[in-house]
Length: 72
Image 1 (cartoon, rainbow, N blue to C red):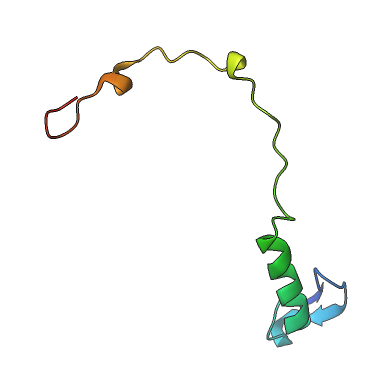
Image 2 (cartoon, one colour):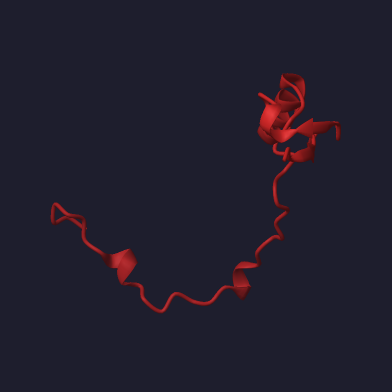
């Protein structure tokens, strides 16, 4: 039984097992999607972080660690 999917770019019907560009219907749709990723169109929006709302670092030893050669 063939798996029928929609091309994520143009919504054309695609037989998944038969498409060389799966899940896309063509190389064109595949490259359009790649360009969208490269252009960061699929990024997850982020809310600005207020530094005051972060918990304080209780262990300041990371700042005071000595370097492996013995210097600080």
